[in-house]
Length: 551
Image (cartoon, rainbow, N blue to C red):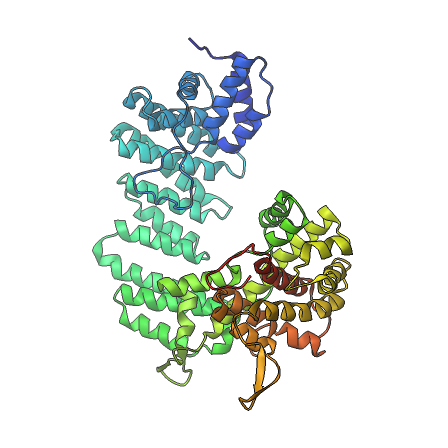
């Protein structure tokens, strides 16, 4: 029969003491040397346990994107059981008992009490700690303890969990840090335990009045425990919170969002006077305020992900094609929203133009694009250009391609023969030398030529004079409009149109750059031009096949 290995227990204790979560403890434990093979097997089984998420409460909303883990190996489960009562750290003890409860190992009452007691003891230690993450971590432990005690009807444990949660709630209310969202979760957990939190919720709603979402959540918590006579007052406070937020914001699109939410909440809660107030404020908001900010910060994790894609490519050509997805990201969200009718909040407002002179909503023609939606698509193109620039820079760092290597990677005997491939290759080299003017001016005609050659078998590329004789070739704008006829997706057609030729609301890079109407284009705009060439070439090389598309 297996026994606890002292070296593994010591390593587990050390990993738990220095970690802020079970996942962090798993990384620490995995890197520790515990000696012989059998000890290593126990350590590996415990690493699996620490990386595994226990079940959530019955009312928790499942995440459709999450991967459901498969059943653990029986040998691993036996090791979890061995250490569940042997480890001193209460959080790990509760975690292991919770996992064993999930897989049905041992007697259910013992596993429930082991898990809940471990979580409660961990919450007490965390709440008393001086670290900045102590109270939020204590709140998460209490949430799990309360859910298990409630699910398995352990009344004494429910009382312990409620008492501990009240103590943490009081600490959060007195905390100098902004922990309103954590406190909201604690109060929701207390309500699930049938604890009256009206007093705490009312104090918290005043304490965290600066956070709109948290304050509204706290008011809804208060409403559940408040007498019915107070419901109209609390409902009005929710709407006034949104109206006040709209008045205090200096951002036009956020003002529109808050006012639309105020109108919706007023209607839902039966407050017609406040609904009229919100709608009148909407009418005084001019359409010019619906602009989208251009600046943005890309998270480090996303930057690392873009570089990792390039690092995973087997060769230069594969890395180039990886910069081009099948569906254009800047168009994906809008297309999905239109498909399922789920436009809410900010995106819902501009579908009805607001007349600032009176309470009449003026609807645009059915086929008219929404100004804000287009502005958001252009904004998305800019952000996506920054991600593409990151990938192109990583391609240069990894492969250091010269003109001949780039020519070989890009060339296609029909769409982009050798001499033209060499020209496009030089555009990439100019880009990596930060000669952005030269890169754009060299690449743009090649993009148009590649598209013309791709469409030639399916779409007329000759312009007719008076409908009789050819007078020249069709220009880029018409070529882009004809892309769907040849089977190419609408999202990429729209993206290329906004990028290259739309003079009213798009970037219009082809016309502005080649006609000398702008200064040196920024790096991410040139990256988008190069990416357009790569997208079209990926069809030529047969990497993307579409019904009816020419390759």
